[in-house]
Image 1 (cartoon, each protein chain N blue to C red):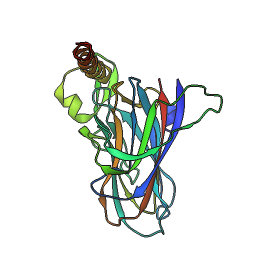
Image 2: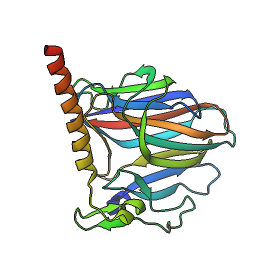
Image 3: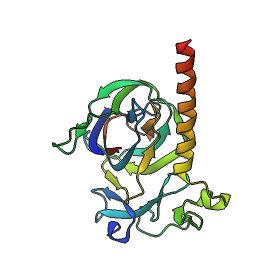
Length: 148
Length: 96
């Protein structure tokens, strides 16, 4: 098992993901920690953040996962993506949904056993959206993931 | 505080709030949805989901209402098996 951090940035969009975390091979992974916020000039804006499981990751700029353990010798099978130009393919309802003011920072930490697990099917994973964004400003999300 | 009780936790740090807002969460054992047990003002949510006796895990409201035990791990296994069958077929087709 290896742990990685994936940071995703983009100018908020109400249709395209902030970022995605998936796998290119047949390896399971889970997300156990998620941080959301905005680095734009503080102002009152409304954001709805939603995370979906996806069966395809769309087209995006690749993000290199950063190993959280410098002694980790496992290569990352996890693929990060940001600045999508083609949408991911969400499956089912939102797995995590939170409404936030732009000024706020949010962190979710899973209980042991309560991680968001992705199937070990290539190109499956998670994508994070801001379907409601009253200001299209810079937003950032960081996910910590366990690769099995 | 939440982690000590075995729950997940959602933390909102908002300058307009008087303090850091913590909300207990759990992940539904049937659909893997993250369920917040508190509203953002700190009060407890009316719908706390349910508990599945066959798998002995907490589930969200809609999954509790469904009344069936379909653990998310089993759904993942089925989804992966479908992918494996497709890959086998492609390999056989490529092999001629």
